[in-house]
Image (cartoon, rainbow, N blue to C red):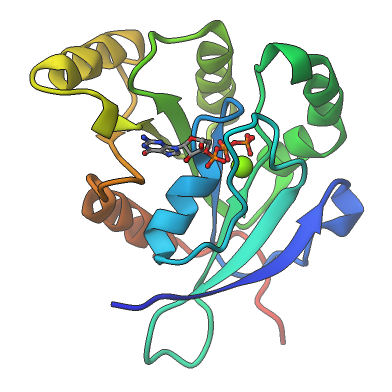
Length: 204
Ligand SMILES: Nc1nc2c(ncn2[C@@H]2O[C@H](COP(=O)(O)OP(=O)(O)OP(=O)(O)O)[C@@H](O)[C@H]2O)c(=O)[nH]1
Ligand SMILES: [Mg+2]
């Protein structure tokens, strides 16, 4: 199935956010964890810019998602700047209160937050803080354990068990942007979230 996706807007300030309308799904996580790659894997094109250098995505990028055969887009994906990378952390932490936190706290159309963690590394303090933030926000969220292709044999189940222990209340989905593992599971979660009507007035 070919999904039709298009770049809508880049925001580094609340005033740049497009008017909320469609249900939105946000991708969050540390710099370089693979947020933009997950979006590209889901839509099957190089929609979001990826890089091996942390800090590639510096704005909240909004993408419209349309299913084939449907006349209008039905969903928006938002690719967020990463956090927690030492060199960037000061810069990014200055950005959080400016536009990222207001986005996560106040965006009425945000129906699901997808928090990416690297399946290959133990839980980091910055990951814990994000998960705590999301729990406290009351937003529906799930955890993606990404880059699962780098783990072999029983390494992946072991890593997943460690994450379950770390985040006992979270739904955890193993994923690889490289092999496509976990894509169906993730799409199912996203479709379910998209059924939720955003808390915004529909345009008259
Ligand atoms: N092996 C493997 N590499 C991956 C996977 N996902 C992403 N990568 C690599 O990880 C690096 C970072 O990917 P991005 O998608 O740019 O990460 P990001 O989280 O958007 O990074 P920032 O925008 O800098 O915060 C790139 O070199 C990707 O090729 C994966 O599932 N498996
Ligand atoms: Mg990125």
